[in-house]
Image (cartoon, rainbow over all chains, first blue to last red; front, side, top):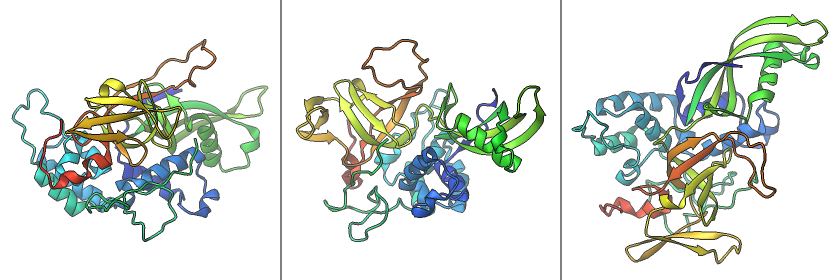
Length: 159
Length: 203
């Protein structure tokens, strides 16, 4: 076995989710028929809970485009798309301290947050009133959850 | 988190697969070979993305199977240092925490990378486990499985396969990710949920 190119391109969570979807992965019982391996389904289930499940190709492309104006590094753009931070506190660990040679790099974090709010759809919501088929639940960071909404049921997977 | 890697490999397609279209047969062999396996320095192979080229198809003497040389791309899970990932809590012990992503479970947060001051106490709900608690501003913040935990990748290591092991050692992990939760916005998501209004700097 030979490695031709170790890094033939970085993929956002959204692109991997899209790829699995195009091969027929799904959340419901038709999953046993799809040609997707069990280990791939584990990745699929993980991705469904992240921000990637509500994103679309255009929104991700537009966001990446506009981010270039903010002088953000490519790895940081990838992180932002994958995590969809909705507050400064979430954005902070993503943006690195200025690397050497760019000491006066001032990042417009508010501008980036505005862009995130505009272009990237919010995280998948879990309200206790609307039961859904998923085992995992996650609150929408944009809303202010009350005490009971912030629950996570035990996942059914045992690996 | 995910990268595409291009590989080239010579593989044999066993005779029982020869009734399938060639691409499917090769894909199935590739999946058996690479799926859910860790390749050193490349990461955990998640999926076969596509097949770029196939050549060969010779049958070697004495063999019933055809041998092909295939160039293909796979999706690998390889977090980069500095990436922030949301994971779930799996277990904790005196050395630190262990987090899981469902498909990848060897994420360790060693004790020095948990925000200080902290303390480790025996878990009242689960006798075998220890529980980590962060003390800040007089309040106790517990680290448990109530919500997702964000961590930043500190380092990734690919330990080599051990030749000998003690009887009760943990199963060998070919890829270990070390995480850090000692920074603003990291750690359980619930710690930071109320910080939209308060403009405080944590730690």
